[in-house]
Length: 333
Image (cartoon, rainbow, N blue to C red):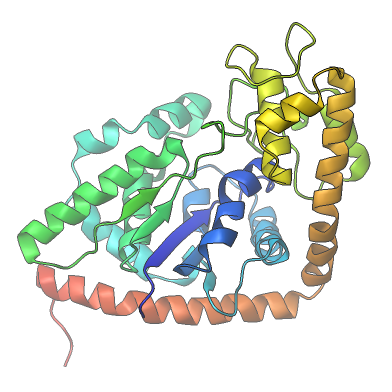
């Protein structure tokens, strides 16, 4: 194909929230017209933290339906579950043998999650970045959209690919990270704690707006959202609460923040938060309706996953065969 390949994925853990939409899915929608895309439900990554099996399966279907409800084109691109393509795990083992322990020990996400889940510091958590490298390298991915917190993992992927290529020749495409920046250069932060990234795994559900939240819940969450001292509505690092809300408003309406500052120059925080709640409710309503229609037809969702798995396996196997041959594995004749 003439188009470059884009690979990206989200863990089907917790609930998809507006931070996921603004930081990832919104950009996927723009990029899918330019790139040959693979969108992955990275369920192998998800089990580094203990999951309820039935809930994990439900979330995979929920995420798939939400992806499509948001506008991802499953007919012209590939949407699939990571666990449906055995090559991900197989390539991970080989790449493990070309990854240094010191490199993995420096990964900040491993350190952060080890502190967050001290009772479950497992090898999967430690090896997470190598599986991520396999995800990317299997498909000759050129572009990998990630948040700024994942840039370190992409740099490791590049290092592993380059190290392997230096030994065995031109096997892997060395990918580039694509870090979509909001107008402010920031990320979507928690509503109750605007100093930390919005996360659906947060024990305080008031900290995030789930894509499937009802209008009543959305309104309550924005009413309770933390703002800052003073009454002025403007973007500034010293005002993380209102700055975060301005970022959300701007991202969902495509209105520049400077314009919003002028519109709300003499308005109260309460008025601003009330308007923002209405914006989010109106934005999510058609997505939620499409989701309900899609989610009620699990037969169709299974067919989409099966088709995605078939296409992803067809892409992945030639690369895996190439790697097997490069390292010297015997091919059955």
